[in-house]
Length: 82
Image 1: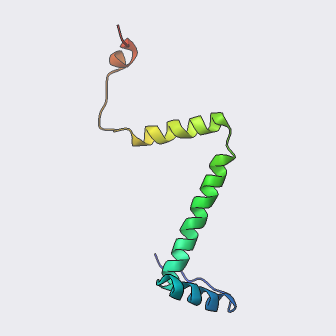
Image 2: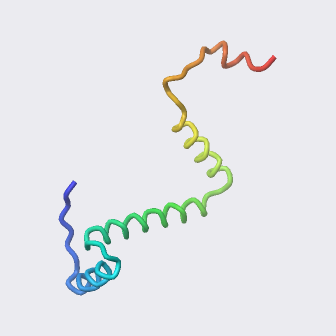
């Protein structure tokens, strides 16, 4: 996806300098910066969650990893261990 982003004239030289120091393009530097910021905000949000919210999130993530091609019957589900 291609997007046009207006960058302040004072910020552009700083971005170019950082990109040169890092050895990457300005585009790649901006992508890495946005990715870092999103990860930071996600971790910040997780830290502010209650224990119950963290448990709910964990269950949601586990359900998303479940293999949807494997199914069992209702009888097997409620039968349990004997």
